[in-house]
Amino acid sequence: MNTKNKIVAISTILVTILVSVFLINKLSNKGTYSASSTPSISLSCTPNKVVALGEVNCNVVLNTNGHTILGLSANYITNNQISYVSYSDYCTNSDCFQTIASTTNGFAAGNINGVSSNSVIIGKIKVNMTNNATPGNSYSIGINNIELSDDEFNLILISGNVTTSVSVKSDDATLKSLTVSTGTLSPSFASSTTSYTVSVPYSTSSITVTGTANKSTANVTGNVTNKALSVGENTINVVVTAEDGTTKKTYTVKVTRQQDNVATLSALSLTDCTLSPAFTSGTTTYSCTVKYNVTSTTITTTANSDGATISGTGTKNLNVGANTLKVVVTAQDGTTKKTYTINVTVDTKYVVIKYHTNGGVLAEEHDSRISLSNNYVMLNNEYLVTSIAYGNSLGTTGLINYNNSTYLNIEKSGYAAKSNAEWNTEPNGTGTSYSQGRAYSSDDFCDASNGICEVTLYVNWVPNNIESILNIDNNIASKITAGTNLSSIIDQVQTNEEIVLYDKSGNVKDNSQILKTGDYITVTSNGTSASYYISVLGDVNGDGIISVIDVAKLFQHYRKTNIIPANEYYYITAGDTVTDDEIKLTDVAKLFQYVRGKISSLY
Image (tube, rainbow, N blue to C red; front, side):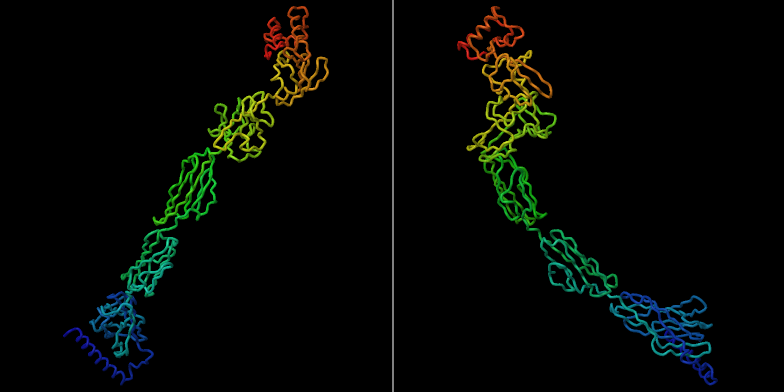
């Protein structure tokens, strides 16, 4: 006899016994109970969601409702989506029900002592989902034909089905939508299509890709928000994982960011060159004129696009005259190009002024960039020059200031540059003088109409005290030429001294009067005064005129027939024509030759 038949036989025996007992009890008024106190059976299954072919374990829970239950039997509610695997005991204490029989159709179990507690787990049913179970659907697990017997041998029949619901996890790993923030998917989205392309311009630097699962229970990863895009292909994978945790589908979006086609500049400049017109990105042709001494220029640029490349920048040599320089901008795409042309003219018509210290030196306070080379002033080891384009002019600050302490500060002991004529084209000051405080045109220096002309300006030094040009010796100012006045001497110096002229009698003379031997001057500077006698060479008698009278007086002194007094030694100095500090016949002879016109000068 098979197990199923045994269960049926046992059930039949139990039923017969229980029915007999029930009838006896009914006739004797025993075992009567109301429907409200009927025991119940329920199922509690875990998990309530399973993957396909997954296993479910259900607890069989007994509520005795005041009865003492000795046994029960039940049949499984079968279908082709569920396979009942087994029924097993669940024993934790004296409430344990032992399995009497278990088949794929049902089970029977009992406890000889009976169970009177509520919510007692009396057994476990193991269930497997079959291949016929559709993912995403729910199915009932249950039992029916439930029969209980209590300790009074009452047969308790529980009508209907006792069920619980179990779902099969979805295996849907598809998207219901896939969107991009810019551009267009190609091909158009379809749930079954997993590969797409999108093309965006270079100006698009980021993209948002959003995939939405077809099932809310599925998980989506790989969505991006404002993802930075590199130039070229960018791959974005959106992965959908179904509820079952194993079924996956990957949607691939390849976003191609096009290369930039911008080939323009945002900045362009050249050293020593002022562009005309002023730079703008869209203007590609410019010109400028530079000075004759500019032999090179450095081109500096900035592209509007980071991806562009630029050629033609850096330092470029310049020739005199016209020079054409080109800067080529190539866009990132490698094909779009733009050429900027700069026509640089090195001017050939210029006045060039160099500066010479004329024996002066740099004072301690001067610009550190300034140095001297062969008395020429150098700026950063190049000639310090002022250049004037032909036809142009200098302002009142155009010429260099020789004694600007923060720039040049040239000095020469005992001398100062002549006021309002600080520079001269000749070292001795006999050329053309120029003031460092006046305005000049290019033609005031030289003619540059046919090209470059060059001028050297020397500091026009003059003594800064009268003593330095009077040849003072033993308080005598000697070697003064006959006919000279004091004004002409003072004009040769740059001084703040107070100078007063007196005749030999002590009377003040006008500076415009001719000087005579025996006159004297007083020189006052910073509160200190000094006096010097005037000795006019050849003016032995002190009338300021050289004549035979002077020859005769000098001859008499030589012959000692009329000695000049020692306290009037300035007359003797006037007669020393050969300048050997003594009166000899040669002095008389030279003076006589001068008077007769045989020689033009006593010097």
